[in-house]
Amino acid sequence: MKIIDSPGKRQTQQERYEKTRTLIYPDSGLASRELAAEVGELIRLRQAKGESVVLGLATGSTPVPFYRELIRLHREEGLGFGNVTTFNLDEYYGLAPDHRESYCQFMRDQLFDHIDIPRENINIPDGTVPLDRVYDSCLAYEAKIEAAGGLDIQILGIGRTGHIGFNEPGSSKDSITRMITLDRVTRKDAAADFLGEQNVPRFAVTMGVGTILKARRLVLMAWGENKAEIVREAVEGEVTDQVSASFLQEHDNATFLIDTAAASRLTRRSYPWLVGSVSWDDAMTRRAVVWLAKKLEKPVLKVIEEEYNETGVGELLTAAGPAYQVNIGVFNQLQHTITGWPGGKPGADDSNRPERAQPHPKRVLIFSPEPHDAFVGMGGTIDRLVEQGHEVRIATQTSGNLRVSDVAAYKFASVVREMAEIIGGQGWEGQLSYANDIIGQLEDKGEFGLDPDRVRKLKGLILRGEARDAARVCGVGDEALRFLDMPFYEAGRYRRFNLTDADVSIMRDLLGDYQPHQIYLTGDVADPSSLQALCFRAFEQALPEDGWLDGCRVWLYRGKEAPLAAHEIDMAVPMSPDQLALKSQSLRKFQSINADELETPERNRETAREYDRLGMAEYEGIEAFQRWRRSK
Image 1 (spheres, rainbow, N blue to C red):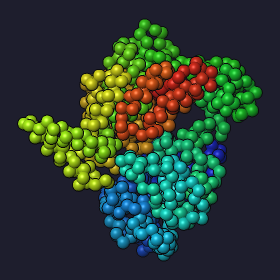
Image 2: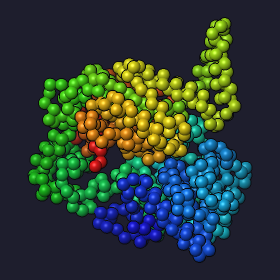
Image 3: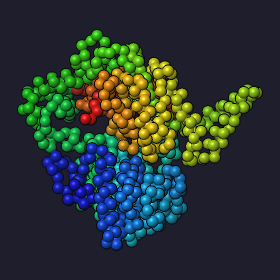
Image 4: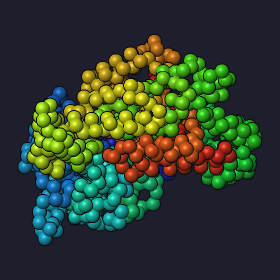
């Protein structure tokens, strides 16, 4: 199926809620390969005719797999870019082209330095022009696009505010290239790149919505669960300037290219019974009944037959029996997910429990992509597992040093220097030299320079200390922590990571040595370029074909991603008020944690409230897990 040459807006029955052509792929890799192949085909076709191709390009983690495939086509299949002219969507205002977080530098790192495109054919908005010349610079950018013949294909991503480019809520359909104030959500999402939200530029120069819509073809890419809700709004919602991506509904040749995680909130995926017949297995029945109960704001057991028929779920009763019988079945399913024994309850009948009673105690291995992730996702459950006698190990896969501010490193080095100066004497020369070296390197690199290896190491050690403090709060001793410091992280930075064989080998060795009965991890639905997704991929690649894995269960928790919905939960671990307070205490041990992560206990309360509304017992909070099974 062609991506960039869309056959209009013809739709199947399942797609009838979608107002823009939307293609769903199993993963970003396959989608990116197919898109790159079509772009390459267009480039070669134009080359044969002596014509040029004008591409509009995007930045951020979303297009990275696409750019890597273009590089592969150049290196391995001889695709030349001599006839290609590019125009980037946007640039931060105030950042020099060589600033490590400028989009100019990003494009060099991710694409331009690896292909043979003429440098004079590369165009990126200028974020360094004086304020009184920004307007003229933007008009000149518009004129240059027109002089090049207009954009043949515009590649887009989508932000959590629904922006394309940096067209934040309120951007009009006919807006042109201009300077814009960045939304706070956008700045929060970029905070990790800039070592804190306070360092993220407040302004950017962006192509306008009107400029984007003039492109002959539009392809918007979105990966990961965190993009699912805004994708649904843009594809199925009303056209509105509050979601600039929704304007793609009015373009004659626009395509959303998304993976299964980003597609999860579309009607055909969330509520497939509304767009056609479905197979009513237990999972689909549970999803439909939970949806119906929430829609009616009623407990599961109070939904009546007429309400099934009036809301489009009558087919379920034909397939599975009367409403009361269906309700009881789903009620029991939900009830059986709840357990205060996440490691299994010894001596109990486990036929209706999420986890096996035996063996007890279990060897439990908890993976945390960054040191704080496990405490964000399952801090209360960690405490419960330790309390119930299991052999718990926490493996932090990366050092997390990119999250630690210069202020924290400077503070540590200053204390060491002051101690050396006050105490003085023999034996402190090394500490004094070390502290002065760290302080000097921090001052030399400046606010946005890359951390030297010695500074990154110190920041990682600072975070190790915080992880130990958090683990102690949850009952885990220092001897039960493993710091893997996976090489892909130490050699890269956010949006620029590359998994290596060495990373997989580290995971394989740990798994083989410990041979756990239970594994907890996250990252399965994260943006594929994120470190969480890469850590999950390393886990998948490290698993043995058989052996100890046959006696192990793998549970997925959510960290930065959207919480599991009630119908997705396979194990719900209740928390008392004291346990939720303990979790909050463990999170506060991390100085580098952001406000959203600190608010995780409130998300746990909302999961408990959802269970309560469905007719389950009332709890203070619930940590939710989904069982993972390796694909055959």
